[in-house]
Amino acid sequence: MTETINITVDSEDLKEFKEKTGMTLRDCMKLLMDNVKYGGKLGFDPFWSEENQTLLSKAIEDAKHGRNMHEHDLIEVEE
Image (cartoon, rainbow, N blue to C red; front, side, top):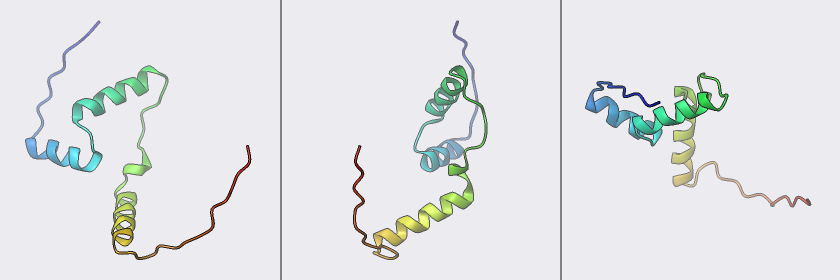
């Protein structure tokens, strides 16, 4: 069975949502429904927290400017 849901969302909110998440609201809703459908639980993903997003943005800026970058030897793992 298929149901149609109509949601009214401000266009600026949609634009901001896509910029912050990299996905459309439609794709996000599908992902959410698939998660629930296959036994997932609804909950807050700490990856999207404001604190983590701030840390990631700082790390990206640092990397772009060559700051806080350290070379290290690769660790080989035998299987």
